Amino acid sequence: MQLLPEYKQDVPRVERFNMVARLTHWGHTVTFLLCLFTGLVLFLDGVDWLAAIFGGYSGAGLVHRISAVIMTLVIVFFVVFDFKGIINWIKDILRFGLNDIKFLLVFPLEFLGFPVKVPPQTRFNGGEKGNSIVTSTCVILLVLSGYIMWFPAIFPAGWVRVAYPVHDIAMVFATVMVCMHAYLGSFHPGSGESFWGMWKGTVRSDWAEHHHATWYEETYGEKAQTDEAE
Amino acid sequence: MAYLTNLYDSSRCTACRGCQVACKNWNQLPAVIEPFRGNYQTHEDTNADTFTIVKMIETEDPVDGVIWNFLKYQCMHCFDPACLKVCPRDAYTKTSWGATVHDPDKCIGCQYCTYACPFEIPKYRKREDITTKCTLCADRVEEGLQPACAATCAPGALMFGNRNELLQYAEDRVKHLRANGFPRATIYGKMELGGLNKLYVLTDTPDKFGLPVDPKVPGQIPFWKDWVQPYIGWLIPLALAGSATSFVTTRILANKHGKHDEGGHE
Image 1 (cartoon, each protein chain N blue to C red):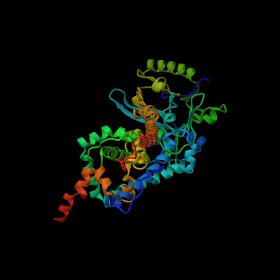
Image 2 (image 1 turned 135 degrees about the vertical axis):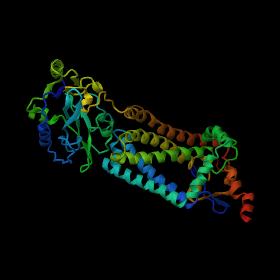
Image 3 (image 1 turned 30 degrees about the vertical axis):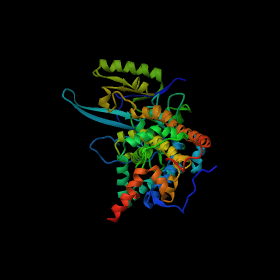
Image 4 (image 1 turned 90 degrees about the vertical axis):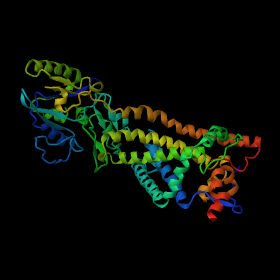
């Protein structure tokens, strides 16, 4: 059984994610998972074996804090080195329109493997837009509430008390999105080239044209080519 | 087992602070020197090395002139302690006779208890990365002794014993005080937060002693522990189960409808 599609080098490919975006993505993958499993030590009561993996409760706490700081630095790295990329990302999310709603309506069928007809999508389809909004909002909330919980003495007590449920809620929603995203971005047969887009940075042109028609047309289509030539 | 309670009678207290010293002595707590703030109170609040303090609260009354209220302040040993509820390591336990005891070996210093406590009693001790608080001298009581503060109290303002008996004493004492120049004398700890294993006889209303009149566990805490933690977390296994279902169905349907047309949507 083939889990991932083959990476084909001998076909025309277009860039989907630049190096900064990819480093940010995978940096957050590692730090998020480390924070998740060390955090679950406290969220789920009585999982001593999970704490033991990280060298006990204090070890897990240390890994959690180090990962959290790196996670924060990765955000800073993204902002500093590809601010334009963030703006373009946000701009694309804000293009949420009728085609995205249509996508989300047929998506449950697509998710289970039924063949469906999907309207042309921009750089990020309806589901990816949703993931972008929920996950990044949750990560920002996690980082902010996390520092409040880490240094409660320098924040008002009310903030600290709000930070506890916020940290847990944001963790749950971010983890739900990460579970779905990890599966859809890899082993879901419909995801196709998307894994290579984030791993190698490029996707097959025909895949991009088929799955993100609007984006492909605007970025690599004939009109974009002539605009560039002018 | 009957509840063993420490009763503090503010009308008998002379603010000698022998209880503070006895507490430091028994619990082997180092001195904490705070700057002078213009009154006789030694510490602004309890801290990681000072489990109990005597508060000295001065108020000016147009009729009675300057009033000086004393209050021995420490952990209230609530019957339903919020610290015990939020502790992720179950470091807090309730003894059969009503003391809320904290196990420093289990503590990881997260300080959830500090912010869940309506009195913010558990305090963070940086050098050991743990929180600390009054133990109601559980180690002494279980050996048949009184708490160090009660044992040392010279004017008899602190009394240790059966809670029901002390409650009876407190009611008689409040009746006596009300008839003898303290019309607003009251008991504190009988009903507050569903009952505290610490009783106070106050010569005035609790707010005159710096105590919250109607203490409450901050609302975020029950929301967090009763709703968020037990229920919302189930969304995660749900997402995993959904992905696993899709993993199977997509592959079954692919055999039925033929191969997916070279990838779909992520």
